[in-house]
Image (cartoon, rainbow, N blue to C red; front, side, top):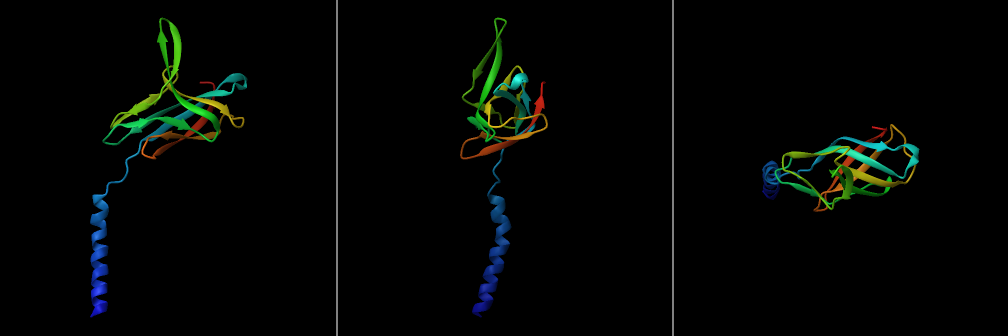
Length: 148
């Protein structure tokens, strides 16, 4: 009798698992697409990174930093044209709108990647992490390109 009760309890517990899993939504995460790093001529110790970051989530996501094991430092920047002069400034954060995307591209929002830890060449791949808060990191796999 005791064995039957244990078996019945196990069956009921297993039957409840799919319903339990449905109640707990998966964590929604942004996705980095079309990611690439531009090498500059002359071996300068800085590179620029570009990508499209899509946010399929129901809420906006705020990126507060970027890092990579391949660089001494990485940061979000924005280039703007002010009175005919190109200006660049570091951004403390980047907001990814719900169900939207942000384009990191030449002449606009981009990544500044400083002090590569080893020489990079066209065709290499570099991993970058975007700090999306709440202990979440969004990983991007960036292809290294020469020139534009």
